[in-house]
Every structure is written in C-alpha cells, then in structure tokens.
Image 1 (tube, rainbow, N blue to C red):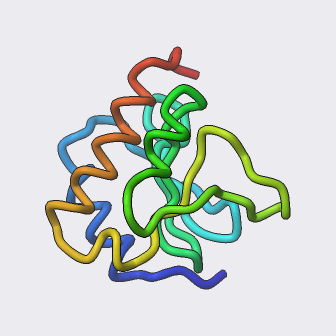
Image 2 (cartoon, rainbow, N blue to C red; image 1 turned 45 degrees about the horizontal axis):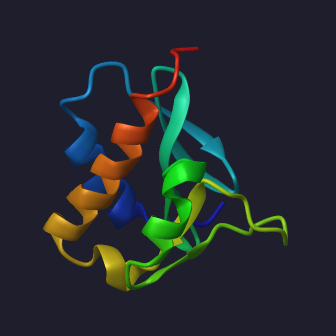
Length: 109
C-alpha cells in the first residue's frame, strides 16, 4: 500500500483536534473516518476528499483537482487533490476542512 506518509502526518496534525477520528486502510491508501464516515484519505494520487455530490462541480473548479476515479468510473462527491494543491499548510487545512464540513452533514455510523 503506497501513500505519502508525510501527507498523512500533516492530515493527522490537522485532524488532531477532532475527537473520534479513526484511520482505516482503504481505497489502496489510508482513510480518515470521523463519526464513522470517510472524510479525507491519502492515496498514491494525493489527497482524496469527500465533498458530497452537491459540492462536486464546485470543488473540481479549484486548481489541481480531478474526479476520484480509482475504479475507472468517476465517483460523484469524491475528488482527488494533487500534491501541488496541498503544498501549503493553509491549502491542506482548507481541503481537510471541506471534508470535515461535509462529514458533519452525515449521520454518525
């Protein structure tokens, strides 16, 4: 399982104030679950963010993003952010925040 350990550590640091975040190996990488819902993940593609179907197109308008298509078919509501899109702590914090904000709209599992 190949993913960027440095990026994973940066995400851990950002999520450290969120009670109950659990790491789970999935999607060929590492997912961060909050309240039982996948929020963000690290894959060999970079950062994966769960933005929700209603935020999909708006999120894809940002630079360095593309649809999450690890199965060969785009999954609405999930996007990849290339390493260039999370190079700064502020950019990474913004993307992780978007994932957490969407997860807050979901019922806990």
